[in-house]
Image 1: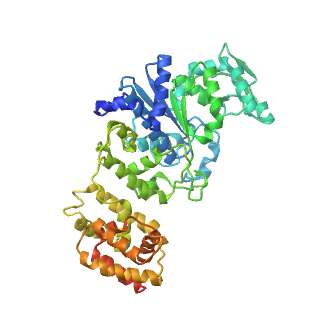
Image 2: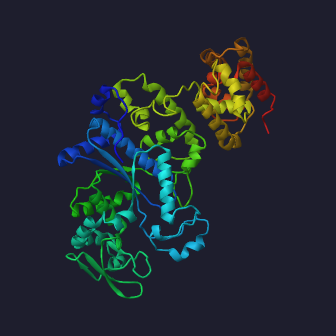
Image 3: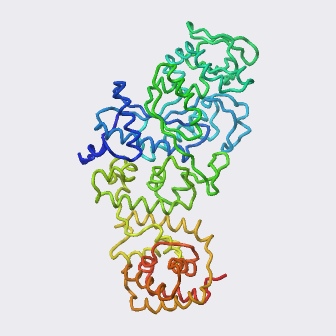
Length: 541
């Protein structure tokens, strides 16, 4: 796929990029130095994908983060060096177990150990094989988020001859590859290990068998087939594939990969991948190792366990850009990926986009919005939206108003933002829908109201009286000052306990956005009514 042009950028950004500290620029500078040293006239970025399952949040993370580094590289080099992002599917791997997600698992049992592109398609779609279906889902997934990439199939690369040169080189270097691999294996595995996995001529299965002979000159391997028949075959033309660790290094060498990132679970194998790549005559690419996500209990997220949150689940409650922000921030820190991180990610995203136009060139390159939008935060349907309310504030409005549809919310919003309508503020309307959904599923089930203490009751009563002259006002700052003074006069120490009491007694939550902003949005009269209901015990079960 040809390069697309970078959006029109302020020339100052090119200069600022040379010293930008954001992690995509730090990684991109390594690639610039690499190409300066080698004289290579193209930068190749790669991400890998296992088509044994459908695309998931990890797939989004790798492609999004790699795209951020690619954009930084293009800015550093003024887009004068062509770049490619290859999304490589390991679809020639044998199906070692049947995923739980298929409609009829037993129907696939006869196809165990066959390459995934030779396993029938169980999903009822028009695609020829299990892998073809999942590969199509991958491309649709990536296309939906506007990624610029080239799809590559391992089956195609092995069968079409694109890997032939690298495979023949691997035959020549068979002993050197074995010297790298054998020390990493136990005695039993050492006795049967081969970096080449032949495809059985009789059954079509991927075989994990030792080599009886390797002929570097002829480019052939000799082994016993499943029925005991001795077979000699060429390593080219799709007759075999490589074990996954040697395959990493071979692929890097064959494709001329300059950059690939992977999770911490690959880190211990990185030296193996690198050494094999070098054995096959190519420098190992630059790497970026990222931390794995954790679930709400601090456990590593696992596809088989189904813990954590999927990309579809995130996007049911928040815009894609908020997920991209979460992905961008601190990739090398273990982060909890669960529903309670969504509101903060949403609000921070809009804060970063809002700040972009006010920033200098250097500041813009440190702003996550630059990296999320590939250099142009104003591009696309949701770029640079006018967002007069935070997601957290909307959540509290939903809570106080018991809203189940956006029309109720817009009654409050249009009073707070005169003239605002769903048509004039489509992004805010979209966010209102997310807030209703998120509140219903995650906030409402966990709401716990408590009664006010005697001291708090007096403070609530005083607050209601003090708010009366402000009825009709949307001056959040003036309201916040009144709330602050009432808590201070009541002698509630520390003062943050007063604000905590407001949310616990009135909304059944431990925290919320600035209370003055909430009152300005919800309404002074409505807040006074809320106070009366709470003091009357209406919210206590």
